[in-house]
Image (cartoon, rainbow, N blue to C red; front, side, top):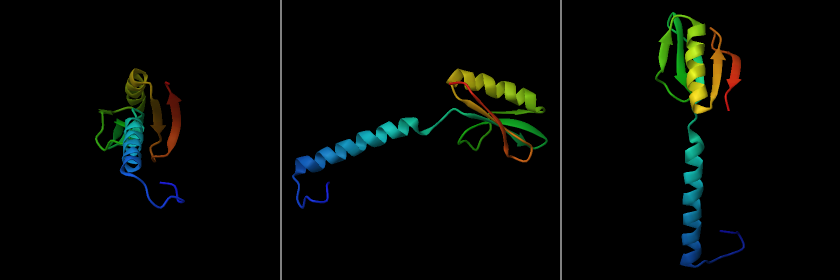
Length: 96
């Protein structure tokens, strides 16, 4: 409600509520991404979807994990984020 208005009708309040609902619904659809991260895991490498704690797959070698991540990223039109052994980002590949 604008600051200058002191009272409003129930219709104005209802309109504000409906607008807020639809705005939040649009934002929630964009919330999750399918970006795939190749991260160090135990004595090997893992592929993990962005935002997930659980890993998608485990691999002994980084190049194998990168191939898997690329396949998933192409399927969902997402990015592959490749990390170094220390966890910093080495490279990012975009499949939009």
